[in-house]
Length: 112
Image 1 (cartoon, one colour):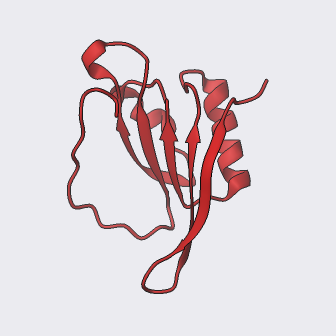
Image 2 (tube, helix red, strand yellow):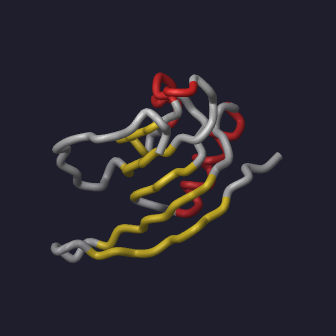
Image 3 (tube, helix red, strand yellow):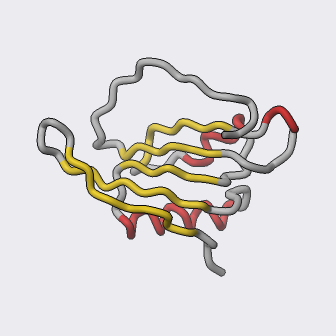
């Protein structure tokens, strides 16, 4: 089996300190299966991304911890809680080495 993903974009971005980060966005078409999540993390290790934007997770907010991995320890998700369905959903994963200061979270209940 394979994980059906579409790498929409991938690029290196440089911050003011000169550090380069590899960022990418993936449309994963659902991550409810443990097998698909395992394939996702295998793909992320291969892509060597620091910041990952994931579309169409189809996960509920209470399942956010399913996206935690030894390399990606900081996760933010938005899901389709309003319709009580496993559809839509987005996530942002930061690699444990990415410096980050948390300030505020804003989201909607529509999974966008």
